[in-house]
Image (cartoon, rainbow, N blue to C red; front, side):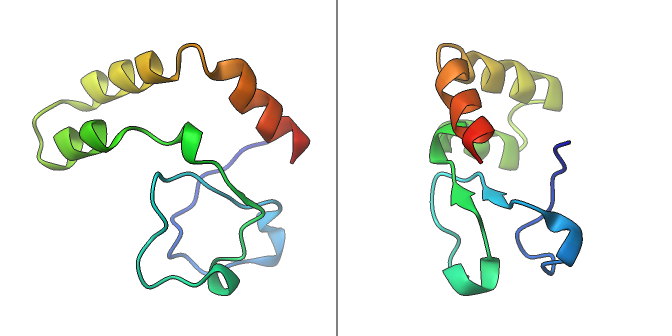
Length: 85
């Protein structure tokens, strides 16, 4: 099972493997505090896509369509990385 969680939420015993999915390491957050199992930058949306979403230039539907388009061709590599964890 895969669950999502904000990186600023406290770590809980039942979290299991924690995977950070961002392009850049979050400012002011130490690796010890975050307690991640791994960091999968390739799974994160592009900087441009996040910018367009945050500036409300695109709808959620457009965001998801563009994200899926960005991930096309990388699925097997990403799934292999997640399976290893």
